[in-house]
Amino acid sequence: PATRLVKENGKLRLVTQQNSVDYTDRMLEYSQIQSDYLASAGVCGFIFKNDSATCGLEKVGVHNADFSELSNNGRGLFATVFTTFNPHIPTIEGEKLIDEEQSEHFLARVHFFHEWLIRGEGGWTAQKIMEFHNENKLFLLSRKPSSKRILGKLIADSFDKGINPEIVALEYITEAQKS
Image 1 (cartoon, rainbow, N blue to C red):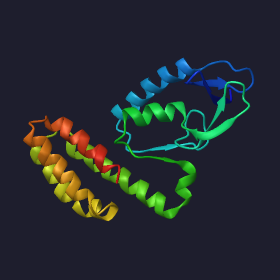
Image 2: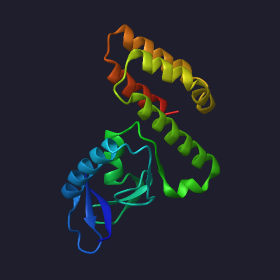
Image 3: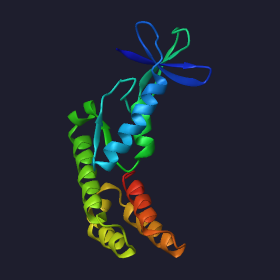
Image 4: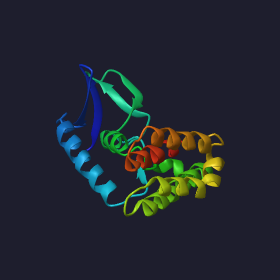
């Protein structure tokens, strides 16, 4: 059934529009399971539905407890869980794909992430991370000129601290996707 977000006593709830049946716990459980499944299946990007109580990334309507007020500063429950668990996977709302620049940026990030997954098959090493970073310097520079330097520093600092390459690789791609 159609749902909406309601904020009551500081907590966000997902309820049906018709009779306010609460689906919050079921949606959170479902979202965690599906987020894990999608990431382990190798999803390289995810397109969410705008204005959705479950799948909106931004500006989703949130009602107060008595439905007398509505703010458009929410995020859908599934979208929140997915992006929290997978900040390295590119996401976008479907309506933004109409804009050529946003569409190109999203697809470039999807391709970049796909290349990262391929390179990481069999596990990450310091050498693999550095090679990936150097091979993708033009992509990084085209997105945000300072990103190559920032990511290079992240790699160097992490290895100076003795951090495991698998953790460094995840931190690297998460930071790279912010560009």
